[in-house]
Image 1: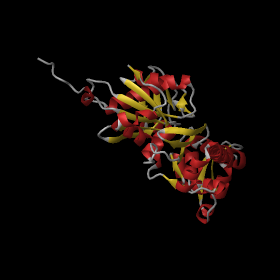
Image 2: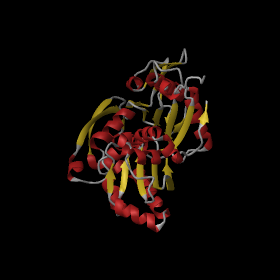
Image 3: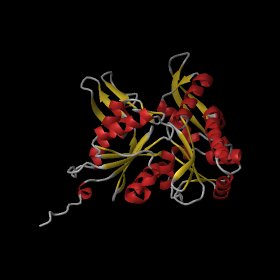
Image 4: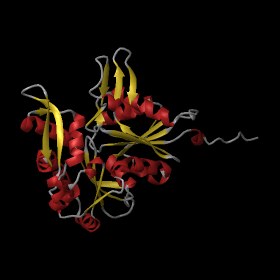
Amino acid sequence: MKAPFFNFRRLSRDIGIDLGTANTLVYVVGKGIVVQEPSVVAIDQNTKQPLAVGEEAKRMMGRTPGAVTTIRPLRDGVIADFEATEMMLKHFIRKVNAGRNLVAPRVVIGIPSGVTGVERRAVMDAASQAGAREVHLIEEPIAAAIGAGMPVSEPTGSMIVDIGGGTTEVAVLSLSGAVSLESVRVAGDELTESISLYMKKVHNLVIGERTAEDIKIRIGSAYPTSENDEASMEVRGLHLLSGLPRTVVVKGPEIRESMNEPLSVIVEAVKRTLEQIPPELAGDVVDRGIVLAGGGALLSGLDKLISHETGIILHIAEDPLTCVVMGTGRILENFDKLSRVFSNSAINV
């Protein structure tokens, strides 16, 4: 008599993860996106245990006592603090796999295309230590293109620019592979930092990271328009000379000027990628346009800036923040068909 057949995949929840510098998103097969939280961990220095992860931990930034430290465990798209990354992954994997722990999940993780072999291994080890039975890595621009619904498996050129918190990924894809890849460690965080430095240099005002990010979101822009040029907001911080709190008014054009340098790096990365591709694929890109994804796609006028500099139409993805994690989810749901896109072989835990 034959032994009964058990489908062990039903006992686990396969998981796709966009392990981002700014935010971590988790996709569970059959459920969709279940986690979309900041990549922040609050750790009790006395016990070395996490007190909070994600949104709760981010609210603690700049407000913790000496015994508690808030950490962003990823910098420039790669692991800067292995233990904190492992804590964060464990928290999210256990959260989405609660009640179905008979079989550990298969995990697909989006990573920047420019990471080193050591950095790849660090991501895989962190995921396996966090409870994954099988770990696959996929380069973020490929995952973003799949998540944006681009025809990456067809013999035609598709170009995507994915601007996250730590890296900007530029890729031209065809037949489920990357024809040209460009990764620069200049993205949303550098745009935010440039605003902080500008406020200190021009207004003698020290502001926190959250305030600088708020300025970027509310009145930041990459290309001049009448709406952007008229935007302004009050900013509170510590005055360098007096050491006392002070409020100043900043305007849209000066914030755009403060971000000129990192924006130029992003534009040059797009241009370099275009210069490296064969003429046939270049023609496809001109005809189809470039897709803009990631949190950076939400910066007002960035599509117009890149279009102005390259002469190519840009389309902003329908939901730019979720393209990478949606791509990992679609790969898991069509695993046999899309497994060619992986940047490396899996490790089985």
